[in-house]
Length: 159
Image 1 (tube, rainbow, N blue to C red):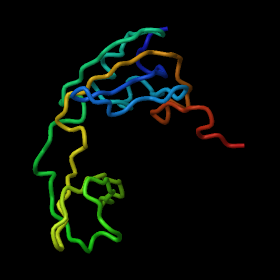
Image 2: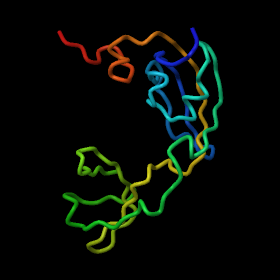
Image 3: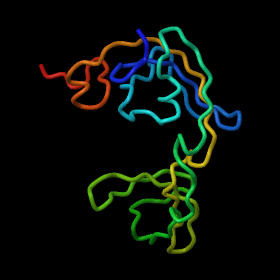
Image 4: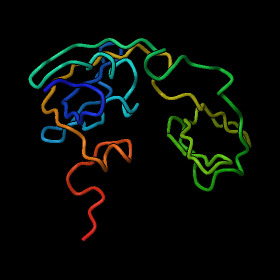
């Protein structure tokens, strides 16, 4: 079976940026996603289209097909009062938007009562290099299609 729209795919992956491993799947814990539903970045999803179990590929994803370009307008200064605890430079925190969604941001600098933060994704503007091995491909269940993502064992179980 090949990877096409609405197939659930399991894969092992390693992500490197500038030769440094940024992220990888753990042995026995593959990434599981639903093809064609923007569960993973567009450049990787496109590269996997049509592949089959056992295929191994190296995929280079440019920023526009990954996490986008860096936008310096996404760097803002917040008040120290907006933070409850000690602020750690380089740490990721989460802000709640007006619509209730959660937006991650990274603290860049703390100066007096001002905290400089970056709302860009940490990998924005970077070329992503994936080593991927396709472990399994199956048809999605009606529930998975309805929800728009793959369910691993135990997700959404109602006993």
